[in-house]
Each structure stands twice: as structure tokens, then as C-alpha cells.
Amino acid sequence: MTEQPIKVMVVDDHPMWRDAVARDLGEAGFDVVATAGDGEQAVRRARAARPDVLVLDLNLPAKPGVQVCKELVGPGAGPRVLVLSASGEHADVLEAVKSGATGYLVKSASTEELQDAVRRTAAGDPVFTPGLAGLVLGEYRRLAAEPADDGWPGSSKPERPEAPRLTERETEVLRLVAKGLSYKQIAERLVISHRTVQNHVQNTLGKLQLHNRVELVRYAIETGLDHM
View 1 (spheres, rainbow, N blue to C red):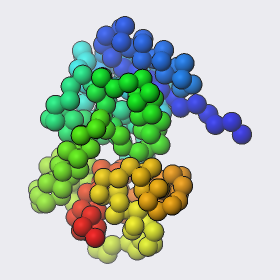
View 2: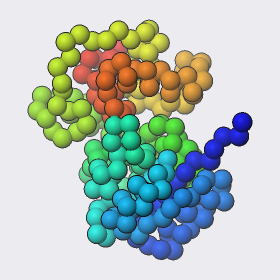
View 3: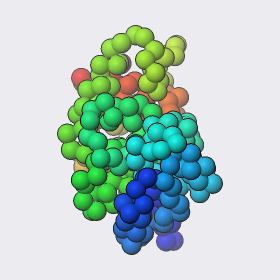
């Protein structure tokens, strides 16, 4: 059976850039189902077109990219968001991840890097411009040490009367996720397939009643798995 192409939507307020990205992705075999030039249009069209991945600029008229992200990304629903921004500022990166983005790429990335990032984002594998992944993981660690509700997903720390039992392999995968490894790196280290890593992560999310990888990393750090 032929795999369905990944459905992508491109959001950017610069028409030439937006069209170029959409054209490059289309020529690479992605199904570009919609484009948008402002935040309100992006939310409306994304809900209608239901893309797998939203390639999103942060600096948008009518509604900023982080607000678009917050409105579209939710537990078990909405597209995965790959931010494609001119800004590599740490505050922008952290705000994007906090609002639900799966990955963050700066616009100086090559066409090949963007295509690879879209594929990985569609698979749920967070992807960041080199140097930014460590920053995000460091912020997870800092926030995990704070008892207050700081607005991050999963940050209110619901009571867990008894931790669900994870299998040895699930625990192993979770520990590597918390250390900041990509799914591909985890698959190579454990000598298993990328799909098997994804399955373990999905099973663990279900058992722990968590919604996304941000919450999963936080849980692992809170329980000390990242230091094992």
C-alpha cells in the first residue's frame, strides 16, 4: 500500500517566501493543502484543511504565531507545528515550544533541512536548529524544579497516586527522550526501528495520561529518569 503524502500548510506573511516554501515542499512530494498570510486566516484555514504539519512563521499580522499555535495544538488534536522563523532568539524559541510547537527552525536552514524537519515533525520527533535543542532541554530541567504552575503543558503537576508500571524498554526509551535524543538517535542506540520507538512513546503517554513529548520530558525529569 502506498503511503499517503504528508499534508502540509505554510503560514508566512511574505508572499514570495511563502510561495517558495510551498513550491519546494510540493516538488519534494509533500501535499501542500493550504497557505495563509496572517494569523486569523491561518487558524481558519488549518481547521478546514487539517494538515499534518503546520510550517509557521511567528511574526504574523492579525494574530501572532504563538497564539495560532495555542489555538490549534491540543491533546490528541490539531496539526504538529514546525516554526520556521527569522529569529533564533532564545525567548522566541522557548515561547514557541511553550505554546505547543514540536520543532523550531531558523530561515537560514537549507531546503533539504526543512524537508527533513517536516518529515520528522510529522512523525512527532522534535527538531531544532542546531544549538537550540540543548536550550529547550535546559529550560525543561529548570521548570521541572519549580513547584509553581508556570503555564507550561503539564506544569500544574496533577496528583499521581501511584506511578503506572512501564516496561523495561519503555523506561529505557523515556530516559533517552529526557536526555534530549531524537527518535532516530534512540532507535540507533537501542538497535530498534524508528516506528518501534514511536510506539513505545505513544504507549508511555497513554499509561502516564500525558499529552505530548513536552509533558513526557517533564515527567522523566521530575522522576529523575534523566540522571539514570
